[in-house]
Length: 486
Ligand code: ADP
Ligand code: GLC
Image (cartoon, rainbow, N blue to C red; front, side, top):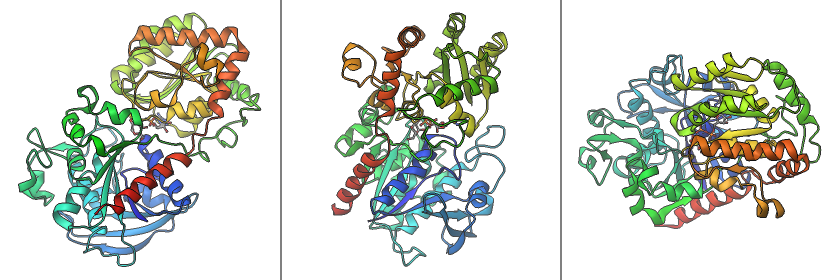
């Protein structure tokens, strides 16, 4: 089984969110169970810097617009994953992020940047590949940035490999003006409903959903949700038509990276059977963030993009009341200015009780996950979500809304679930401030009044196997099914 795994971000090379975590850890789990896998990623400066062992393996030709690009290959040291990198100086080697410049403005040529990524993936799986000693049977695409790959494979490269798209977030679709069709050398005849046209625009994600041989989502609940108008972002009709071919596979976590027993970012490590270290991590975090050092103050953690999806606007109106009742807040995130400002104001008003860090900080994200008592994630929709999984692993019970992967991984604490030892967090009854408030109060009730019960809830989460073991086998089964299909 040879798999080309195509992604626009891969941890530890380049990361803006959970897609990078998955693209860094799933290939490694698949490699462990015998899959011959290579990852294809754009050659952003960070990727070129971090892969010290890069070697050129081919010259890339017949790409849209670009006439001088090459394919390099290197290995991620920790995982020994082979990474193929597209080096095209004008396209990816720029200051700023993978999708936007330093001011957050999307790169205007994103259709070309990710069109080229998609095209290279298709070429590598087709009869004109410049690499003769390695051809994939499966091309595993991820999100809109790789969405044109299945279309190029079928319509242009006439590849015999099978394609699949993993949907990590339907909210981002990559829709662009039809003028890009010619630039990207896509057949105009497929710019129609039965193709990649979407409300008069070229849609990268629709191209994937329409042309891929199969579709996966990053949790079973999300597979069902996206077939409804509420979560399908306009593509629910097409997804419903392909209903039988959509499989939801819950994300796992990289247990080498996210493990309180070995985490190098923590002052002291701890485990389900030796929870004592978590206390020191909490007081160190409180000190670092300028919070009152108080073991009994319930410390609420947030690490998140601050966008509508994540629902943290629901926390703003209730947070003062929670602080007044003795809670503390440790928030790390960035996103919508209005929300950033609302949290900054809360921190200014509550020195010693609320810490708000606007920005991106990998070590601090680990310290918040470990040092807090509970993790707040009231997402309106959540394809999978990794942070609640990290919360479970770190003995920081998640407080979540019942959607997507949150519903598939967090078990609400009630009499039955507590008795049968499955309770591992607290689940809101609906996406509203009032529901979030009452859910947090339920958690506080246990935290403040019943230390034994709290420890049990922590341990229930910490003893789950959240690794990729099971889900990697499910992906392998999909690959096998695909390669058998004619
Ligand atoms: P999404 O990909 O939708 O943002 P996930 O929960 O799947 O949500 O993954 C988010 C990932 O990004 C996690 O690894 C989380 O720790 C990380 N992350 C999000 N915001 C920040 C931040 N401000 N600083 C550091 N890491 C962050
Ligand atoms: C997306 C989703 C998130 C998911 C991640 C990795 O960013 O928003 O829910 O965990 O992809 O699959």
